[in-house]
Amino acid sequence: METMEALDAPKTTATLRPTRSRLILGSFRALSPGLAVAVGGALVAIAITAFVQGLSPLLVAIALGLAARNFGLLPEKLTAGLTVASRVPLRLGIVILGLQLSLQDLAKLGWGIPLLAVSVVTIGIFATVILGRLLKVPPRQTMLVACGFSICGAAAVAGVQSVVEADEEETVTAVALVVLFGTLMIPGIPLLVNLLGLSNEVAAVWAGASIHEVAQVVAAGGIIGGTALATAVTVKLARVLMLAPTVAILSWRQRRAGTAIGMKRPPIVPLFMIGFILMVIFRSSFPIPTGVLTTAGSLQSFLLTAAMLALGTSVRLKTLLRRGGRTLALAAGSTAVVCVVGLGGALLVA
Image 1 (tube, helix red, strand yellow):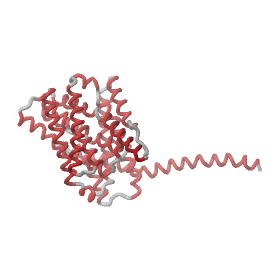
Image 2 (spheres, rainbow, N blue to C red):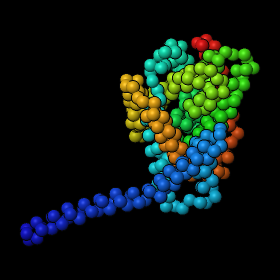
Image 3 (tube, one colour):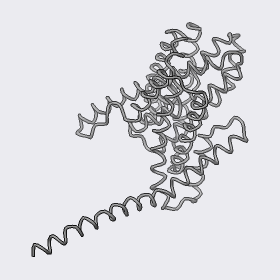
Image 4 (spheres, one colour):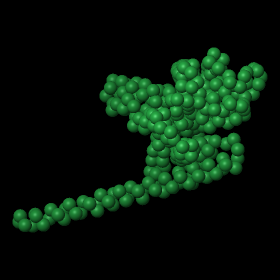
C-alpha cells in the first residue's frame, strides 16, 4: 500500500506542472486577439495622424475603438485582451512620461514657475470640482476632467482613473474632452497673444501653464515662434510633475473613505506612480542621449494610443452622448479657469 502511494506521489506532482503551463498558455491565447487589435489599431491611428496634420493619435484611436464597438465589429473573444490593453499600457505610458522631466531644467526658470504650476493645478482642480457640483456632473467624471485639464491631459486622466475607480466611459469622455479643448487652444492661445499684444516670453509661459497636453503645447509653442517652444514645454512639464502628489492625495482620500465603509484600501502611492517618480529622478541624475529620449517619447505615445483604442471599444455611443451638455460645460469652464490662472501667473513671472 505504501509502495503504491509512493509511486503515485511523483505522478501527482508531474501532472500539476503541465497543468500550470496549459493555464498560462490558455491565458495568453485568450488575451492575444484583443491585444493584437489594440496594437494594430494604435498603429493605424498613428499612421493616419502622420498624413493628416493637427490630428491627435489619441483622438483617432478613441474614434476607431468607438466605431468598432458601435458598428458591431468586435467578437466576444476580444474582450479579455482589450480589457488588459485599456489598463496596462496606460500605466506604462505614465512611467515613461517621467523621462521627459528634468528638475534642472525647471530650476533654470526660477521658483516662479513651480509656484505657477502648483497654483494652476490646485485652483484648476478645486474650481472644476465646485463647477461639477453646480452642474451636477458625476463626481468621478468631474475629477477626471479636473485632473486632465489642470495637470497633463490623457496621462493625468489615466493616472487618476484607477484611484477614483472611474469606469471606461467616464475615462473616454474625459480624454476626448482633453483632446477637443486642448486642440482648440493650439490656435487660440497664439491668437489671444496677438490680440493682447503679449511678449513671446509671456506667451510661452501662458501656453505651458494652460494647454492640456504636452503635444498640444509643442504645437502652440511652434506657432508662437522664437524661444517660446522650449520655455512652454518646460513650464508644461512643471505641471506634469504635479501628477504624483495629486494621485497620492486622491489615494489617501480613497483610503480614508474605504476604511470608513470597510472597503479594501488602495495604496497611497500606486506602483506605476513610483515608477514615474523613479524615472524623473533618473532623468535628473544622469545624462540621457537625445535619441533615447525621442524613442521613449514615441513609445509613450504609442502605449497611450493603444490604451485609448481599447478604452474606446468599451463605450456604447448612446451612453456617451447622454453625458453631453453638462460635461461639455464643465470642460469649457475648467479650460477657462486654467487659462485665466495661467495668464495671470505668466504676467507675474515672465
